[in-house]
Image 1 (cartoon, one colour):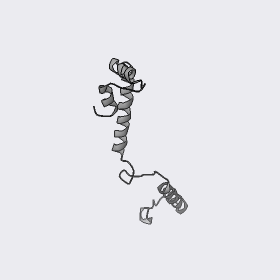
Image 2 (spheres, rainbow, N blue to C red):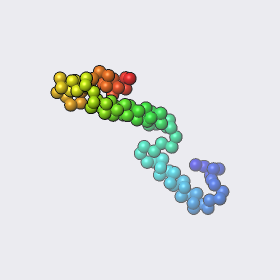
Image 3 (cartoon, helix red, strand yellow):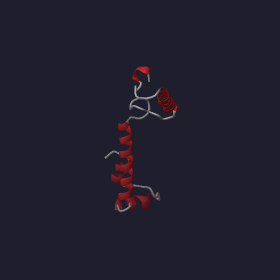
Image 4 (spheres, one colour):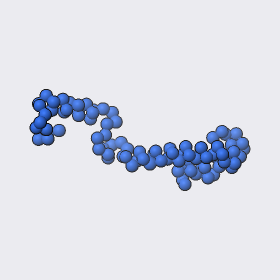
Amino acid sequence: MSDDSRDPTLPHHAHQARLAAAEALRRKAGWQPRPGQGGASHLEHLRAQERRHQGQQAYAEAAFCQPCALARAESGDDSALCQNHLAQALGLR
């Protein structure tokens, strides 16, 4: 922040404290004041959240799905899914 953007209503010591706090945030790991400055964008976070939700929903529905129960019984894997729920969990549907 340059002195040109200094709030004229702030005393000098308050301005210096604000600058120090801003600098501390910029040094903090993972701090991203604006999307697109390294790290994942807001849209990427929303997409990841949607994928997690789809996977959770697929497993919730699989608890009552006969083809999923058959897939679990045949494979011996408690997390096995039918083709439809597997596609949903993988985000392909």
